[in-house]
Length: 316
Image 1 (cartoon, one colour):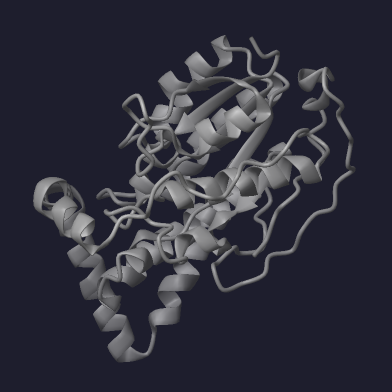
Image 2 (cartoon, rainbow, N blue to C red; image 1 turned 60 degrees about the vertical axis):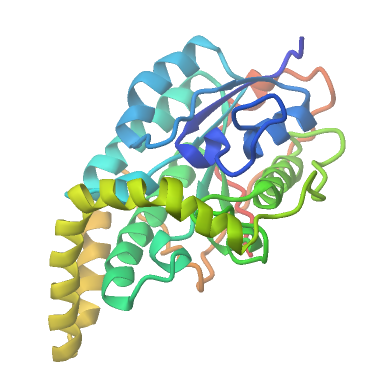
């Protein structure tokens, strides 16, 4: 068995939805990356998980695994729930990243695209969701820098927009998209001198889902997903959409963006974390330089992960 222990925390993106495993269940980017690294994989990610799930049960199981490498990708489900609170999400992420780094694990994090844009929702609905995702991504970026995680700006990577890179539900990567994510994370580790061996291949085992698959998903599983959101997110989202209409009509929509940035900054400040430059899909965030260390096979990963001096972002 491999000496490298890899614990995966998060939601359906890390569970592997969109990339069925040959033997059943899901494989996803984490399984592809683990195979490339010859790592002992413990995938704790589950569909529907929120930041509280990661900071709670998933974190406890991950620490029991004594990982050398861990990943934390979560928060999208928080933004798709009524009563989203960036301070609560920030506190959960701060606790999870801090605990993993304190145990010496190298931690992978990522910013993700906002679902409103991916789903092509009307602007009064897409903008409030996008504002939530921007707040979450800015928080993840700042916490990654604070804890010395290796951070991937996945919101700007091509898997979110490349043809065939999204699964039938248009919310999760397809096999092609998962392979892109795995290759990006491998490149991130390699750039920090933390990965040896060949990168995961990008060529998928099968064709990407077509329009028929998307229609079938909506007819079978998508309607339940929409119904679930309607009982939770929709009332809150309709309120936000009405607010968006009012501010747009008055020309004061920038005030909503400012309020979201201020709430994010306050949430981070309460944790003793300095807010990083905003990380939006169209923007360029300032990058921190780090000292690169080359690890040969057999190097002590736990010792290598003990330095929390900074991050190594990959940008698009």
